[in-house]
Structure formats: C-alpha cells, structure tokens
Length: 357
Image (cartoon, rainbow, N blue to C red; front, side, top):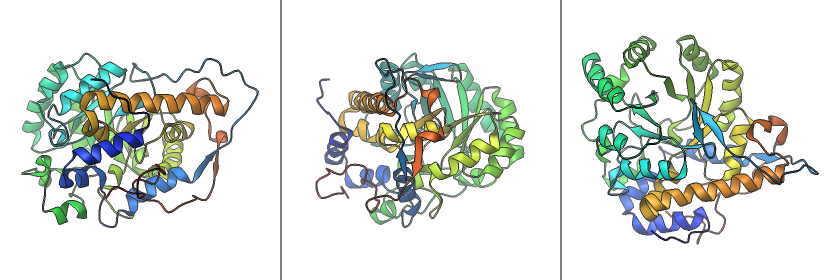
C-alpha cells in the first residue's frame, strides 16, 4: 500500500476521518478529567534538551536490544485491547507491522484474533500481555497456549483492578469488545502472592506493567520481576496521577540495575523517546500513536508511524551530539516551563483548530 504521510500529525488526522466517534474516544481519551493523560504530555514538555556540538555525528545508530531481541529503534508496540475495532485485521496487522519494521509487539489478552493466530502471523518476537480473567486453572490453561505459541515473555498488567471512569466512552454509551463480560473480580483480587504463582506457572521472562512508584518497583524486583514497565495506562485508569516521565527517575533509582525498565505515557515524538532513554528507560512502547497509525492505513500506516519516529529520533540524536543511545544521560536534559496549555493533541501545533475532538 502506497502512502505519502510525512508527519504523524497527518496520520492522526487521517485516523480521525476513518474512525467512528465512539472508537476515536476509546482510543484517544482518558479517565474522568483526563488530568493524568494531560500530565503525561506536560511532563514530557517540561524537559528541554541540552545539546553538545562539534561532535562527529555522521553515523547515528538508534538501535537497541530488549530481552535479547534487536530493536531498530527503542520503540515497541504496546498492548491494546479491542484492536479489531480499529482495524479489521486486529492484532495480526500489528504483528506484521512489527516484523516489517523491526521491533517487538505486545499482544493483549483482550484483543482479536486468537493469541495463536497473532503469534503465527509474523516471525518477530512477541510478548503476551495478561489480564487475569479467571482462577489458577484458567491461568494454567492460557499460559500453556502462550508457551506453545512461542511468546518471548509474559507481561502482567496490574493497574486495572477496576475499570477507569473513561467519560468520553461513558457519554457515548459504548463499551469496547474487551470490556464486555470481562472478569474484573479476578483483577481486583490480585496480590504479590498471585504474581508469584503466575510467574512460576509461566516460566517465562516476566514483565510487570503499571508500576508507578519506587516502593512497588522495589517490591517487584524482590519478587524476581525481570522488567519493570512504568505506566499509568495512558491516563485511562487513575485520574490525577503523576506523569510517567516524572515517575521514571525514582524507579530507576529504586531498581538500581536489578531489572530492565520500559516506559509508556504520552510518547508521540522521537524527542519523547529520547527523553525517556536519557532518564533510564531501555525502550518505550506506543499505544495511542500505534492505534492512530492502524486507523489511518492499517499495517502500512503503523509502519509509517515507526518510520517517522525513526527519522525524528536519528535527527534529534545528531543534533544532540550523540551517535548511540547509551550516550544519553540526564545531563542532556533540563527542566523548563511548558509553553502552551496541554491537551491530547498539543504535541502537534499544526492541527486544524488545535484539537480533533
């Protein structure tokens, strides 16, 4: 499919044209006042770069690795439920885009098609994301399928004990397919002991998604968690939470190298990726931007999202005076006051009317 998007802003505009209002609100909105979601953006906008000059940047390498897998850029594809509402191929389109570009995708346990179909759709490494929807017998049967399908790791999401008050969806009187009949009583009962049991059953590298405090990060590594996934669910769960970029440094300090750290929350620009890298994230994951790419042009639209991010990352690295991601440190950042009021589209100043509600 030939597409000629030159910015991710154009991709978002195309996605808005293609999606019905209720699916747009599901993908783009946050919980209650959307303060957490806006703080994610504000936190990134509150960091300015401190570039170095007279450095040979004729060859810039933006690659990295995660759990032994090569990433073309430090960007993975976050788990998204109900992908079939965004693109007919659902998770298969994501898997094929990840393989075509050269990255890892997370596969949500509440998206379609089946975990086996998504696993077999491409050869790139994939991580299975788990929402607990049953007892230990249910978990054992599911995790047998996950291991037989060759998933690289298991990611347990733990910030959805109750479904957030996502008022855009509520006012649409619409629930995504993933929400219909979901077993929230099991998620509400999760404990650290449950985590231990799931980790033992899985026998896979273990990622804990939804960590938002240093206290929980320390407990997680004490329980043998190999990867801490710093996330506030894109501001879609707890309102009035902190920006994940503000949480990241305290978690890096708490973990002290005992686990890898990945990150999401408001990432829509290559510069956002590098800010997280400078503060200690091994890689970031994109959710909303992934969905917008799929809505704009399916698999090809998502590949184009990643290509545009890559161009922004490489350009920004060169202008910062670095050639490899490991050269980034907090010394390349400085705290500043954001220039403009923050909303879900404020990273794209040329959006017609400023926002696409």
